[in-house]
Length: 240
Length: 221
Ligand SMILES: Nc1ncnc2c1ncn2[C@@H]1O[C@H](COP(=O)(O)OP(=O)(O)O)[C@@H](O)[C@H]1O
Ligand SMILES: [Mg+2]
Image 1 (cartoon, chains in turn cyan, brown):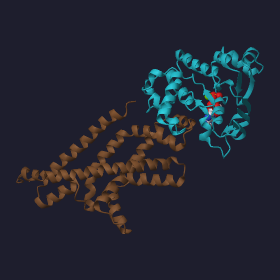
Image 2 (spheres, protein in one colour):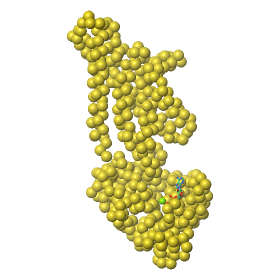
Image 3 (cartoon, rainbow over the protein chains, first blue to last red):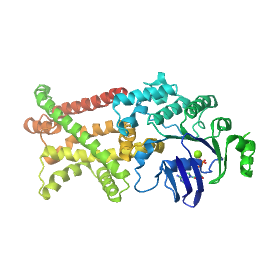
Image 4 (cartoon, rainbow over the protein chains, first blue to last red):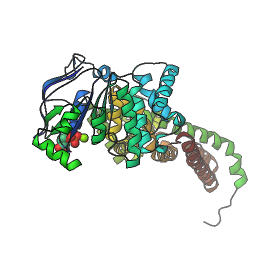
């Protein structure tokens, strides 16, 4: 379970998160929508401790992310994250990309790591690209590789930050299909996305962020069918 | 000037000795690069550490190495340290002096290379659970070394040429030292130094060529 309790976060004078309260249960798929600059990415990077918070608490399985005593490297083993910008390690093959952290962080043997990497790359449809360097992959393939790389760590939670936003339109589908597959397998996920159709289909709940505030959160039928927040109404009108 | 008689045969008789000197020159250059790269990686970590004292050490090193003559640096290692009771052989002084210079220049090259690596690489590594050091070692360092490969090759060439500065610490077993001693005995100045120059040239060419081949093998991405 991920519990976000009254989290505030600023960059200098800019308040980016203004008291976020949110709980994501095991097996839930939460999508987060909202305009650019509303604090969605910041929230994700706070959840895995890449960013500090000013006040409030974030608990992952009861462990406080920003407590001094928390071993963040340990915590990050169970929280996979995939970013909007593709960040394959360019000097490693696809297979090595997916093996590296397994070996260095989880201390898996090389053969175990390789078996798991092959399994995950199969899963995301990259079985024929094992020996290829990332520069040879399309954007969609790079994102699927990044997903496999995160999944190979056997995370309990997956965070996706607009993983299709930098892709050519014809490549978006293959990545969304991968996310759908994960959702159907019961992975606990927080997906920041601009793909409203996708959000409507896969989410258990959808949260709308506006200027650092979670303005509305509801089941997709409700949030898209009968939005209450005026800003959400504007936002939805603009995205159609 | 024109009554100088070329005696190539006599000079060429010294070739075996000079080639032995060339081996010493290459040995010093290679060792000084190995030490230089290792220290430069360490100094780069100092710079990234966020610790002000470590940062100051790295910066001072780079500033001195790049803004004073290499000859002074070698001289200081030999005679400067000698003043503190640390007496190094000419070989060691030359090696350490060149390694000091290499480390300074390479640290600066590494700094430029790091700028070319996106911040997102570290973020990706860290979010996979790697510690800062693991992220540096496995993700940043290999890319940094790749980007710096050409400057490192140039520095290696410099290291070869800098061995001739061993003259100031009475180094007499490297290519320059051997040539200079032969010259003192035989006065075949032009021939000896011409041969030495050709050997220097061939070594540096061999380095740039093999570096190019090595790069093609190492960096397939
Ligand atoms: N590292 C940072 N330093 C300063 N400002 C930042 C930083 N990261 C994000 N911001 C600012 O915080 C606000 C929210 O950013 P972000 O969380 O990326 O929004 P979103 O993902 O919803 O588009 C933006 O105004 C952005 O410019
Ligand atoms: Mg964002």
